[in-house]
Amino acid sequence: MASRMVGYFETCVAPCRTLPGEQLRGDITKLTRSCLTLVAEMFDRRTVPDGEKLSAVSESATQWAREGVPLSTILRAYHEGVRIAFGLVTARAEADDVDEVLIATDLMLELLEAITVAVSDAYGDEQHLVAKEHQTAAQTLASALLSGRGSSALARQTGIPIAESYQVVALSIPEHADERDPRVDANVAARRKLRRLQSELAAVFISRALALLSTKGGTLLIPLGADDDTIFSAATLDLLAEAAEVPLTATAVAGDTDRIPESADQAHELLNLVRVGDKPPGLYQMSDLAVEYQLTRGGPATRRIATILDPLEDHPELFDTMRAYLGNDMNRQPTARQLYVHPNTVDYRLRRIAQLTSIDLATSAGIAQAAIALLARDLDRGVTRHL
Image (cartoon, rainbow, N blue to C red; front, side, top):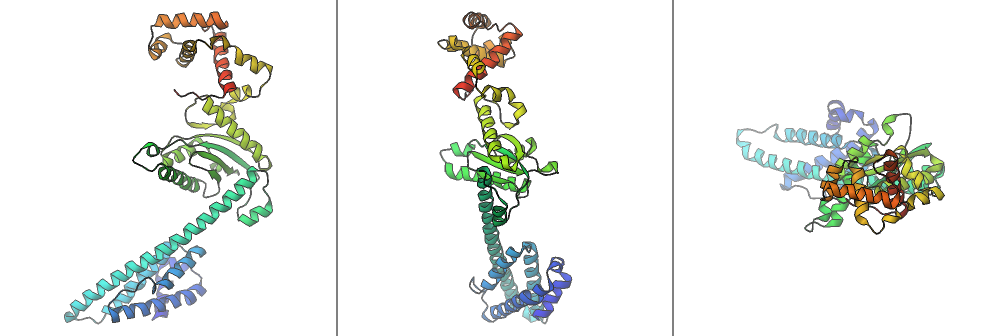
């Protein structure tokens, strides 16, 4: 009977046609015989087998998970097997056997449920273990590349190939609303946020991305190839932000594999510039932050620019007015509304700024000088403002 059922699986259950003949004739035939024995005992005792007796089912599911047999193929075969077995049991039933058929139906449905649970649990556990092993290997390789220790030997050890070049992404992950909710465990909410993001990242890059992430952010290494789909883009960031349910900020720097440490330093420096500049969430490249980056290189000119606004140190209202005026495209009416003052007060403060610093915000040169001086001052102090 087991051989006949396996023959049916091979010819009629489409997913089983892809399995090796050796596996069908060996392991699957043996397991089918074991399951038929369980069914016979179940009807004799009128009791569904417990977890211990389903150990062969669980062990087989674990083995097939390792071999990459789809879970749907396994469950389909079991369902078909139960259906065939039930047909054999009820084939000779007559009108006065209705009560017995009902009992048999309940037993078969309970058995099917028990097998489905055993298979799914074992398969899921093995997949989780494999995913964890891959994540550990990916983290090991990412750490080595970021420290400049990547090698072909390490690639063989982890089973993950090393690309010739990578896009290094520095990522900032803000708190989820649940992390600030006193009714919710903040650590649990943070871990859930990170798991959602990691799952989406694996789906987008088909597990090719290397990541070192915490609930606050971290570093991604995206292998570059001829296909533009492998690039970390603004659309990619949007997908990750949607999965994490928080707005994300990232900076990206591409380079050869042997320059990953330098690329990572540069990407995180750019990310810090985004924070200091109070820029909105999104993906930033070097071209978006060229002025800010150059101002951080130091030198006499940069230091001189940073001190232009020193005369305003004792006048915080003048700093606020300058920021608001520049932020409102030099329009005094919205600036006055933002500061809750009269437009004439804005005019007075702008004149006062010109008197103290020689920066005339009524001219294009003064506006450019003020914007750069503010930026240089903020970068020099490394202070992030919160609007």
